[in-house]
Length: 368
Image (tube, rainbow, N blue to C red; front, side, top):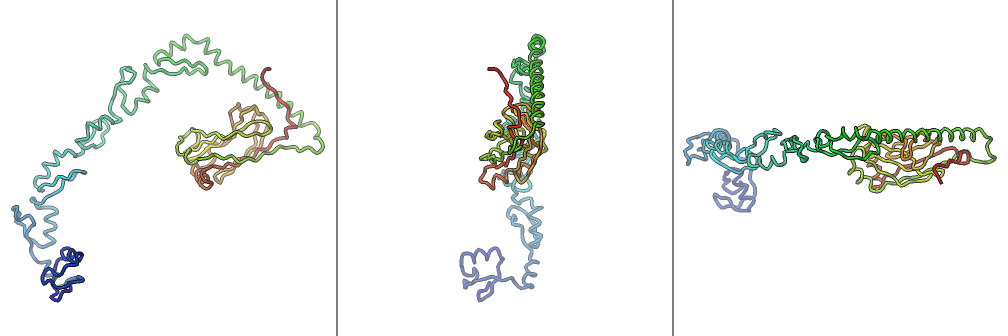
């Protein structure tokens, strides 16, 4: 230090003195800074032989400072050592710490079911939540599925679980073990339910063919003087709070836009923020959906998230509440970024164009 006598101390000790603005511990003179000791002095100090800090407990070691540090870190059987297991604060002599660690309540042991390492004292609690522990079926079917697979067991194999008849329109729920008997006894009902949609589809196809033939006749007729030959619609579809709704959705989840009119028919957009079930991972899906029985050819384009797609197609083979579009429209993250730029609402630009309604036949369906 810079006292008049230039006394020498170890750096950690004298640092505390300087931090408290105290005088030199040796001569009580004023000090303001410390400097590295001369090379000869440091060389001399490095050769000084030290007793082990635990000499009063019986350790006979003597050696240089470096040797002392290695002795305390690796060899001294009297040195206090902390338990190696996370969370344990126990400290004992190096010679006896092993006895504690073999019995430490925080020592990790493998779970017999999931093989994860769990602190010994937490094993009972772990077994109450472990996904690999067998548990009795909640329907008492006699099987013991793993706790994390109970839902799959109920959905695929539990004989006591009630399942819905797979025939569309039946609606009957019976236990899985009774499904064969239900199907056997409901054959006439099931045949009727299965054939009715086919008959309705045939009638729709016949009507569509008549509509298309009428359209062809109209298009072959001479154009009316001054009449525009196309109807065009441009609309901006806004989906508020899109980022929040997209974050809460799963693959296959759908957002429906507000409907809009084109040529007197209602349409809307279906947006799948994380794609349909058959979409590529990380891709969003967008579809133009008809809500009325629109059967004409249409050109349409959709633009969102910096991506624009267009297509020309007829809607005559599309069911009402069915649509056309792209299952891999763009990256899901691109739509979220676009929504952030507009205050959270996703904006989709829609353009529709088709032969003018005056050229299309009037189609009336249903009964009075």
